[in-house]
Image (cartoon, rainbow, N blue to C red):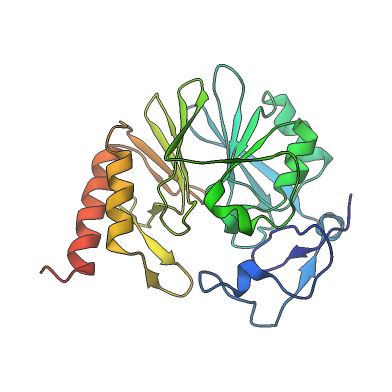
Length: 264
């Protein structure tokens, strides 16, 4: 288990020791109240962190951590005929995690919604010999450059087996969601599934309550219009819109824009 530095607050692993975490210094995140702190995979293992693997929906398996790390998100193993795709990322990673994921068929590709969820993505890429697809607009935020990271450009990228990445551009310019053609959208917090799970929302910064720009929300809605989906999988356990997902996204965007533009 390596000792590369991991920011305690955002959970992103860096390539070498450093004093600051640019991801947390950005206005979309924050430096922990106790100041910048670091950990490592070795330290997480020594303090008892372990993988949690559990079904989240049809052909979708959640991969999380107990105790939770960083902002507590879980990843999703998205099942597909040509091999599983790992959507989003967690920080903790060990041999037991690898074993359990291999039992589920392993990982042929990794896709991550935005920089706050980069976690230990290179560790996963090396363990499963899988490329990591990141939109080129978020290239500057990659904290551990590696040949496994594939930067793509444009609005959509076909991954095969009915899986499509869409550059929704909410939260980060390179913010992306993953659509599966059987009726599922994997959104992380690019489209945030809120506690009332009939709805989603859109923010430039969640912890600092900075709303997303209306034009960005409209663009995302336009890019998603051709895709049909019933379920929307957010970034945390059980944050899932279970039915009528495409309509939920549309009405959520309409509500958001009504308030953002003060249209009554």
